[in-house]
Image (tube, rainbow, N blue to C red; front, side):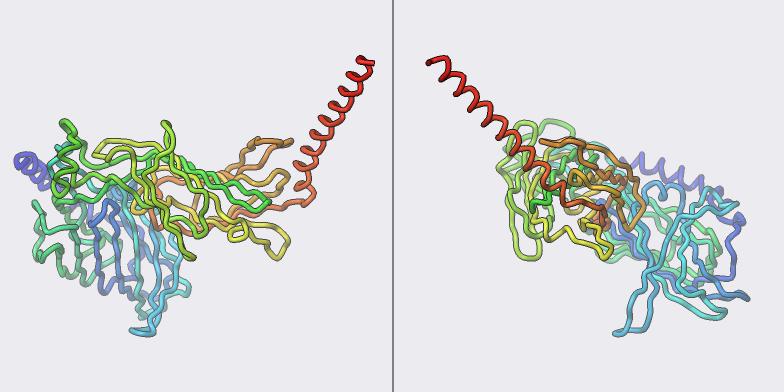
Length: 469
C-alpha cells in the first residue's frame, strides 16, 4: 500500500508544474472584485462531503458589481449535488441570511476546464463596499476507498482529493481551509506549509495574497467506517384519492458503495464481535416520513419483512428498517416501503380555484445519496392542466396510468432528478384542476354493475319459474 501511495505522490508532484502553469492562465472574469478573507470548512465525517465557504468580498473597481463567481475544477463539477449561497445581513445577535440565486454559467477562456457558478446579488455591490457571502456545496462519490477491497475484520480507508488553496477567479488576500475527519486515524496527508493537525481537524493555512486560479493539490488518506449507503434508483409513487387518502409506494435499489467485501462472510463473528467485525457495514436504516403515517409496510421480492419499527408523534414519523442481511461493500438490496397519509394534510386549494399537492421531494432514508430519483404523482381521473413547482431544476413529463374502474386513465406527473442528497428534501407542489362530477363516475359505474346483475338475476328467476310451471 505504501508503494502505491508513493507512486501516487510522485505522479502528483510531476503534475504540479503543469497545474501551476494552467493556474496562471488568463480568464474573462472581471477583477473589480477581490476576496479580503476566505474560510473553507470541509466535512468528511460522512460519505457525503459538505463544504462550507465564507467569503468576504470587496468591490475595488470603478462600477457596481451584480454577480460573484465561484470556480470549481472539472473533477468536482461531476460530483456536485447542490450549491447554495446567502448574504450575511447585520452583525452578531441581529445577523440574518438573505438567500441568493446560484446558477451554472459558461465563461470563455476558462483555464484547465474550470467550471463556474454565478451568485446573483439582490443589490449591486457599490464601489468600495464589502459583503460577506456564505456558500454551501455538497459533493457525492468523492471519497475513494483505498484499499478497494477489505475483509470482514478490516476498517475502511478512503482518499479525498482537493486543493489546499481555494480555487477562485479573484485575488484572495487571506484564506484558511479546515478538514474534519470522522476519527483521529489519519494514514497520511499532503503538507502545504503551514499545515497543522489537531485531533480530527486538519488545517491548511493561513495563506496570503494568492493570485486568481491558484491551485495546490492535496490528498488526505483517512479512516471512514460510516455506511456508504447509495440508492442507485428510487421510484416514489404518490397516488391522490379524493376520498381522503394519499397512498405512497417507494421502490428502492440500495447499494453499499464503500470498499468491496472480500473473503467469506461469517455471521457468527459478525454477531459475536460487533466492535471490530464489519464496522463499515450497515444492517439497519432510518426513514424519516411525514406525520400521520398509517398502514405502513416493508417487503421485498420474497414477501413481508417483519424487522421494522414505526415510531410516530404529531410532528414526524420514523420507520427503522433492517434488511434481511447486513450490507457490506459492493452488496445490494431491493425492497419496497409503502404507507398511507391523511389527504387533508397535503392537498389544498389555491386562490384561483385549482387544487395542489404539497409534498416533500427527496429520499426519506437518512444520510443516503440517490443516484436517480423519480417521483410519480398520480392525479385523480378527470384531472386537467397539471403543473409542478420544484425549487430546483428537474426533468418533467406526463404519463397515463390505468387503475380499477378507470375509463380515460389517470394523469401522472413525473419528476426526475439525479444526484439527490438530504438537502433536497424540500417541499414541492403539483397543481391541477378537477371537476367534482368525476367523483361520481366510479360509484355510478359500480351501481350500474350491481343493477345489471340484479336485473339479470331477476330475469333468470322469472325464466326458471316459467320453465318449472
